[in-house]
Length: 345
Image (cartoon, rainbow, N blue to C red; front, side):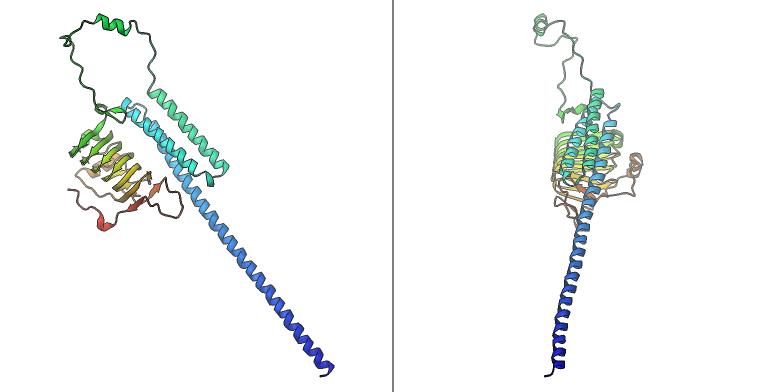
């Protein structure tokens, strides 16, 4: 082998090694680009989830705040029993809104957290002011005579004086209010119950402590409250504002409304027409289908209620106990078409 051949062979070995190193560098650069793309993709997805959580919080918080403000405003000029009921409802809603804020702290910025806390403080102040204005405390006054003196001055008798009618038995107390002051049905079992449009039109209706009852509300109430309902079928015409359901089980409900709030309810079907989004909390086994009940004055009652028949979010449900974005809540479902009721009679 001469010198020329040896030099040529050495150059070939050197060229092969250089090409290998270059190939290795190219592979490393390509992998670095792939890793960078993956990091950007993950960051973008993380940002998207955070934005979805923030959008959900903002829209839900605003909607609930407006609902509470409207509830407090409606206390002006209302009867004492109605005011008491609405103030209780507003207190419960403010408590739930505070819980919703507490559960959302992890993804809120400091600014957004301060704004929400300020809004809650304002609601609490408005609640206190409304309660003081609508339900003023009785003024303190000294009694001229003591109870002992009063009793001593009254002659003992087995019957009331002839000119004084006996005091009738007091009405049933239902959720803090007297039943005689409220429109609705209370403490009944296995009854068929109906109220006409003339009885409930633009009024607040309360159904409480009912078991195994069938209820038909033919008209357009202002609000509808369902409390402690067990194994009932309740149908109602268009509700102008909100329906509040609490402690309901094994029942079937059907109504149109502006807003639905459901608490502590289990194994219940809701046939719904709602113009906002339904809200559930501390519920499980609740299922939804579109409202379809009909009666002769339904169209007239829709007009009286002001509800839009073209907007129906019956399948849009927000679960305050389920904030996992992108994952359906296990606490509610849609009723399959084959399983929906087709005849209410």
